[in-house]
Image (cartoon, rainbow, N blue to C red; front, side, top):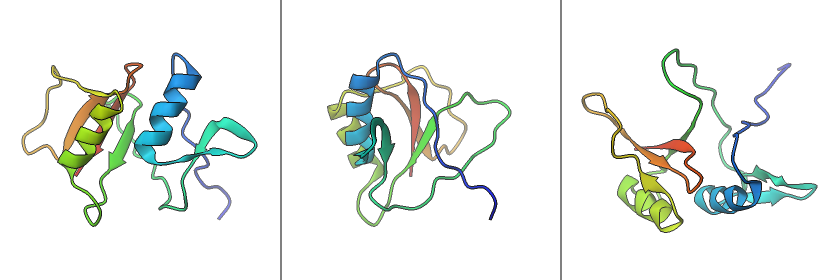
Length: 110
């Protein structure tokens, strides 16, 4: 394979607090050579989802073998995230929209 998706760049207001939130939210660690790069502990590869109507954001998939959507939402809210209350969901939505402490939007998918 010639190319693989190496990283997703997320624009944040302040790297320090954002890095702390995302390290805990994703259970990632800081890259040894640059703490602003967060790396998984050996999980599945990241997919690239193309969409013509949505803004750039992270989709966080819940591993139903180890957790539930509700438990992960509660954990993320305890870390400082909040539900985006005014989001319009499609019928039978399998996701919940949250905002990180710096208002970065992301989805938790069950």
